[in-house]
Every structure is written in structure tokens, then in C-alpha cells.
Length: 168
Image (tube, rainbow, N blue to C red; front, side):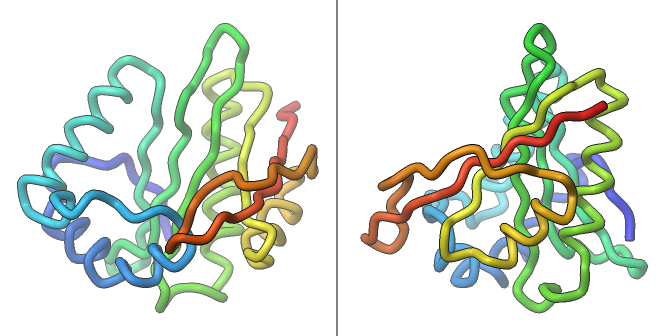
């Protein structure tokens, strides 16, 4: 496995990954706009991510298996170099869950955050997403508080847990 910075040349493989996992992702998080699931939509998304990366407010990474297939995504967003903090988010393709990829990717991203001199990562997990809660706990994230009605998924309000990880 490897983490690799998202690039413009990833648009076809990223579109395939996102399309194949669309229903899976949308059962857990808010859906993307319909226009995202086109060549132009994914190209636009990549450009937005790379623009934010260039401004040092995002680190958009792909999780790749040994064959070079995208198995997931992991990002640092809203990077604040003054406060030395960022938000961590990730998604693993349905057929790749349960293999330890998320644990490994979060651990790897913590090391990248440390190299950026970040001191705190913030993450959220649905109260129903036990797997994600375990991934965060395994990597030293501590539950801070519960947020009721944090998001709407498939018309239902979901509660989330906020986690923090202090980087030493």
C-alpha cells in the first residue's frame, strides 16, 4: 500500500473508483453532486483539490494497493498552519474494507501531518460507524464530544462523534 498525492492524471481511475463505490459512500455520507460523476466533474474536483493543496490548506491523497488500484482516499482539509491543526477525512472502497487499509492510511497521514508541523488533527465519525470509530481510536484519536443532527444522510439526521489527535 502507498499514499500518493492526487494528480490530474488520476481522473479516469478516480471516476471509476467513485462511481463503483457511489452507493456505498452515499449510504454513509452526503452524496456528491450528480455532475461530479463525469470526466469534467472529476477533473474539476481534482483541480479544486490541487488548488487548495497549492495554497497549503489541503493535502489530498489517494490510498493505493500494490497493483496501483485506488482503494480509498484520505485528506487533510482546512489546514491551519497558524493554529497547527487540520481536519482528517477518509473513505475506503466497499470491496477493500476490513483489510486494515484505513488504519494504515490514518497512521501514515498522522506522520505526514507531523512533517507539516501540525499539532492537532480533528476527525468526525457517525455514531453508527463503529469501524471508523475503531480506526480513529487505534490511531490515538480521543473522543471529544457528540454532535446531534450533525448531517443528513439519505434523508435521515445522523449524530457524529468529534475526535482529536494531538501530535507530539
